Length: 144
Image (cartoon, rainbow, N blue to C red; front, side):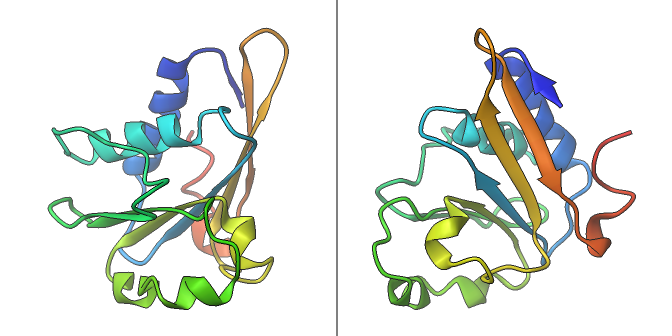
């Protein structure tokens, strides 16, 4: 999927919001500045959050318990050792959507059933969004 603007990136996040279920895990990979947080922001706003949606780079975990379904936005960029991830308490998000930026910091096998999204820079200011779609997401992603 080609995303030409930040608004299109947010719209892709809104499309995700229409199909997520409690317990889903979505991972967002890509280089700094490619739009991972813009996609997450679009999803969180489409789920009904009306306030600011900051990047969780410093907080690492930003829960949105007031949404339906609840969502935890996680940014693992500052994680240096995979053992640190256990201290985040992510297992407590079993009834929420877990949206994880920089999932590679957790290791290749951290979330094997996650919808794996990747954003890459393309020509001009375009972004390319690709997905690794597990069986639990078939028919839900990509949007029709």
